[in-house]
Image (cartoon, rainbow, N blue to C red):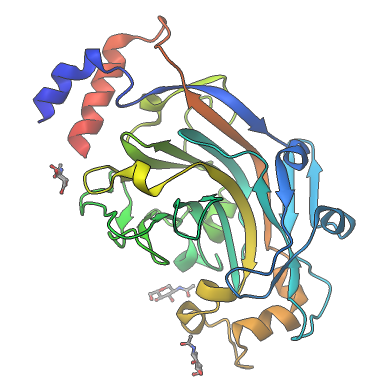
Length: 345
Ligand SMILES: *[C@@H]1O[C@H](CO)[C@@H](O)[C@H](O)[C@H]1NC(C)=O
Ligand SMILES: *[C@@H]1O[C@H](CO)[C@@H](O)[C@H](O)[C@H]1NC(C)=O
Ligand SMILES: *[C@@H]1O[C@H](CO)[C@@H](O)[C@H](O)[C@H]1NC(C)=O
């Protein structure tokens, strides 16, 4: 099989390690133009009161400073249990997107007990999970090294599955069945792709490749290590082969992707308590303390506990596959890398 793929490569330059051109870019206050601030009730039944843009700006929960864009949670008010919860932010991109590369450059991930932040993409059609959900940055609490691994995952309707061998690089394979609320996922293993450890390294860059033909792949690069050229600077073109093997790979062996995924919007939010963050992980976290807080009460009564519950985004960029390889790409080098990544699968 490996030999066959090598033989076909010159005919299929974009089948693996494709070339991409910049299509959309958001840094600093450009996020205000590219996204809508949602105000519906917390879909995970937690204690996030998602506020509109005017409220978020007035309360200092959404602002830009140079290239950095920040969203955060209210840290001042004790919240009544009969209210919708603590003020927080949930942004949805105005546009939807098909196949391409999403680069998310983050310098701070929200951390704290009951905090459940995510950068993800989701179908607008639904009902969930019809049309699919893709989680690029997701995790709980982020309070110490035990909460420092990002979870990359897909959520679909029944019958989409991943093979056991689908993590290349250093990821730890989780569930293989992509259906429903748990979905199929791969955890980062280096204890710095999420939470305080991520933040202490100055953050890093997450990349998602979505292809309805060959599947999804995810990369994570810590700022404490080397970030491939072009990812942070917002280069006009990117070569997937230059990213190396992905940390998490979701191939098409047992999933007919076009059947499970439609156009997606990009979502950035900070959930508080709710389905996952207020569920079984809460009791294992020691966050209940001597008081024995429930996750919901903890969110309502402890505004000071949310000072680190903020996203600092250095930029987000969307790339789409370009038709042909630029003639400047050294062909031998590209092919060698592609072959290595086939073998590593
Ligand atoms: C992380 O988990 C390990 C194993 O369960 C435990 O020994 C350690 O104390 C935990 N670290 C913190 C900071 O809670
Ligand atoms: C957490 O522990 C409390 C007290 O022991 C218990 O009442 C509650 O059901 C537990 N919650 C979960 C989600 O396991
Ligand atoms: C991975 O699993 C798939 C499907 O189960 C199989 O076709 C493929 O050959 C496997 N690859 C390796 C390297 O084991």
